[in-house]
Length: 191
Image 1 (cartoon, rainbow, N blue to C red):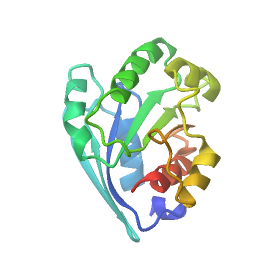
Image 2 (cartoon, rainbow, N blue to C red):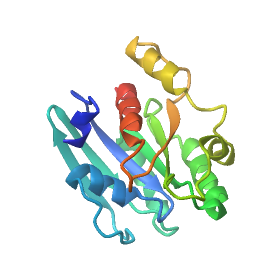
Image 3 (cartoon, rainbow, N blue to C red):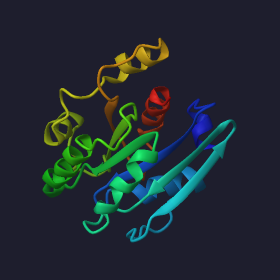
Image 4 (cartoon, rainbow, N blue to C red):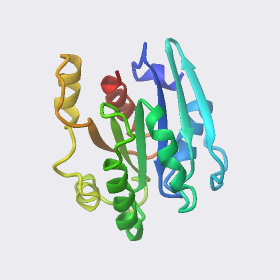
């Protein structure tokens, strides 16, 4: 139901949802699948979410973000069509840690070269949340993203980009803001 509201149709794919612990990965997936938030609890084991909405079918894997489980992320890389990397935009003390994980992710050759990478800066409803510009700088992606409008227009026109499609969107899963546009961007870049 949710994805239909954003005009996402006729796309199939497998997503890997990763990020540091407490970034909002499970909360986002529960919100998308069930329309509710549920009680946030740490993810210690991988979970598989399957969605089917009027022509859209996708599978999303939530593997957790604790340091011990991050080693498992790469076992999923070869089988995914897209990766969603979520960052808690209000947790400034962990931006360096998130950047290190993102840098490792971007250098991993086991990820399909055409798999788009969606970066979500979550928790913008909190007063301590970083701005999009600041989060881009902290993550080191200010010159590496595809561009929201340019990338969507290029994908629609069938233009191939030289590097992996990657973009940052700011959102609040709690307030249900920002991730609809992000998912439109993501699905427009999936093969």
